[in-house]
Length: 73
Image (tube, rainbow, N blue to C red; front, side, top):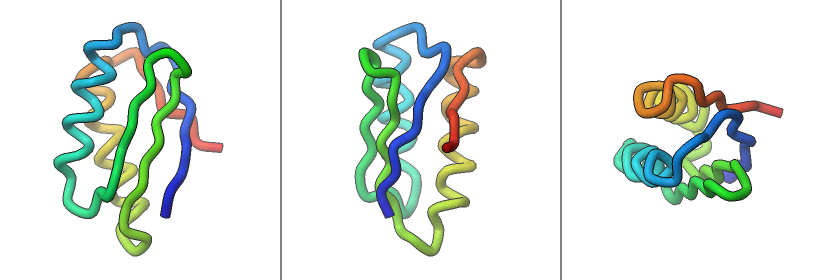
């Protein structure tokens, strides 16, 4: 499954890269891209574990940049 999410309050391109690197290490992640300019996260992960991976990705985002929020549509 592949989904695109909006990120609010992503203030730093370096932090975006750190988020991408951290999420990429999660088991089941096929591909991830955090785009600082468009403030978007594209996540492609195993269908059966997508919700669990998304939850872990949110934790990584908050750990790196506490003010940043992932918006689910």
